[in-house]
Image 1 (spheres, rainbow, N blue to C red):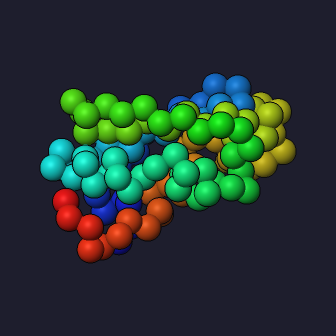
Image 2: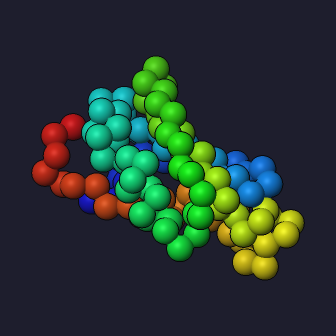
Image 3: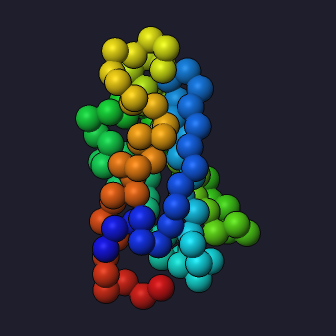
Length: 105
């Protein structure tokens, strides 16, 4: 299953840093997201784009994970030659991440 079936996303960017929050539709799925959407998987998912560190912040009270991705925007939105490589397009790409179907909620 795709991450988008369990969560939605909010994004932001500042300079060369992209910030993506993954928010469970149902708080009962938060633990599943916490286990499945790791720093390693996010970094691998964006291997061609994110050149720096990926940091994950856990927000259990709002059933969300926040990923801060450094050196992710080709120098920054106003400096990059890439079209629409900032946060909003990256959040859509992250929601395409595969989550194991057989993992309990």
